[in-house]
Image (cartoon, rainbow over the protein chains, first blue to last red):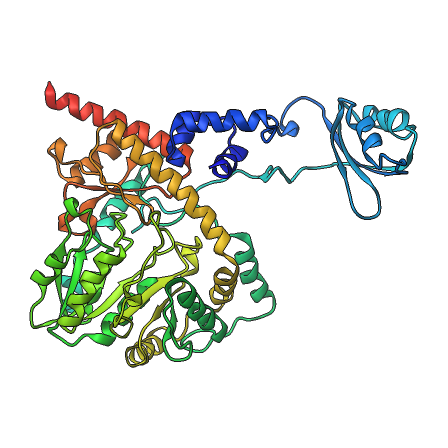
Length: 160
Length: 391
């Protein structure tokens, strides 16, 4: 049941609980209590909106930053990751296998704002050995959604 | 000039769907619940294999019965889903959609004057293909009170000494009905006793929402009496690739392949390469699409209950078949008015046989958002009709 609920709301978090219950063939009360439980347990961490900022008048710059760090004795990477993710402008922080350690994504109002954050805040943290900043030029697909084109139904209207 | 036409062909009624299609296509911005194909795109990994095969220049004929690897995978699929063993070399042919398989199966088995039992409402091609094969179609009218399943009694009553083939069209287009194991067993007993053969059209097998599909060919003694038809269109959302297949005992398959060889040569090569990928690695896609259909099915059933529209709960394909007899008009009148007044296209039940009168085929191969808009319009329409009746 949880898996089925999550599969639906991952794509459509705005769905009514009553409608969700109909789709899953379940009691509405049961679906509501499962949702509440999953929120309480932190399985569901939030309900966000996917926005293609490029189609708005608002300026947004997204950057991926590779960060190499020196892990600290007894705390590994966690301590420094925490110091990074506590900045509100940081969108996500992942520990990564391979050539560097943390992948940080960041949203800023301008190139300058992002550059300033990296130079002044991120690169100067104790334990950060180096950073490499990649600005995102175009988002083709995000969170499973293709941003560049809209679905159009090209089927014949009536077929046997 | 002499009449250039064949009397047999001229006598065949044009498809009831065609007529409606012509009206709809004249209309701009109409919504449709009238399609008989998935709304999903073919999963990308399958399309990619098709593209890759083109890039590699695999643009030649395949063997008549289809790529060996594909036939082997079809045999594996039959073994793992139905526990039926077919010889990939001699008992499987890859066809141009399930439709071709229906045609060549009938032509391979029928002599002039013999009778073919066709349960209706059902897919539009059984009856004309039977006539083209020179046989006599005998319609079995399925009933709403049996949830449009074929009963042993109905079968028994339709059999004459000329009966040779029974078509079993489940999961069913247009009703969405399925047949479960015990019911199929009752049919199989009669088939055995009366020495009949079966063409089992299982194109919607993967779209079953109550247990797993059971093929009549998996019942004792039935494999050797059955031509089992399936394909890639509905399960893998591959309608435009035109790829189906038939599995049958060697003696029948040998003759079917002969017709296929002369009429078709072989199924499209690109599609066959894509189909290998589908049948080998497509299970998860099928499961996801099935779950989506099932959610929409429940949504529609709920909506019908809310508006008090009579409809048995279907457990297969992607159709519901509500009853509109309460409005005192024919299916065609209802569908025409619904289209004219609310701009939503549905298919009158009569397109699938006379006994579809009083019913509509509503397809749920649409996104939930689309379904919601269309169902709201249906609700308006139904309310208006009820008000007209009482005032």
